[in-house]
Length: 255
Image 1 (cartoon, helix red, strand yellow):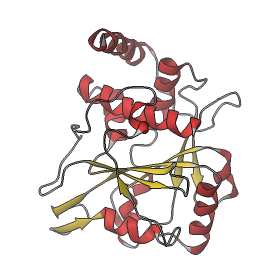
Image 2: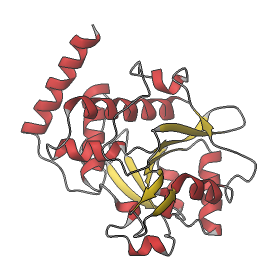
Image 3: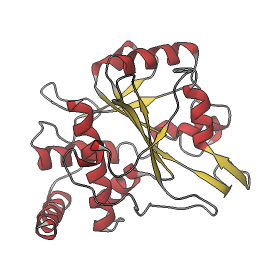
Image 4: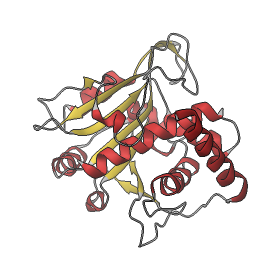
């Protein structure tokens, strides 16, 4: 049955990618039930010299593709125009229940940022953190040395919740079974640096145990979405990355 359903979904993807154009709009339609909102944050000093602004990575390809696929698979009213960029210190942060944040190794949470993010999460908001790694060797910052994006993000999030720690997930967690019944956390990643550790899934929970933030460490699911849109990603890897993304959204919208 899973093989049969996978073939149906694969056929749907082919139909979408061959016949539907990619939108370049950044203004979400008013009737969207889901908007893929991306957080724009303040950068560390080294983040200001990266070839592509870190918070901007994979925009707008992944941002337009994901809500379009979500709508086709789940029936949620959304489309390729249903995406938006929101500043982390803006009151607009409270407009959307789900956010995407990438390259957190370059984030610099100013006091107003931390306060705004904490209030957003305390109100029940959800953040997907993607595209970062821990490696014994990496040229990412122009130096051939150790890279510890998760360590940096842990320190920054202490400005938000001084008393909370990230927790490593197992396959038993409900977030992996909200829509798709994900069978393995052993996933392929779009690129690997020498010394990079295996992918892991980390979360930040509220006082009731609900997930507020999920982190794809040593992974980059939106890169897969972007590459599929460009014809560069294997279908299996694309399907897997989209299954994770759809499960994240379904969890966020129902908890």
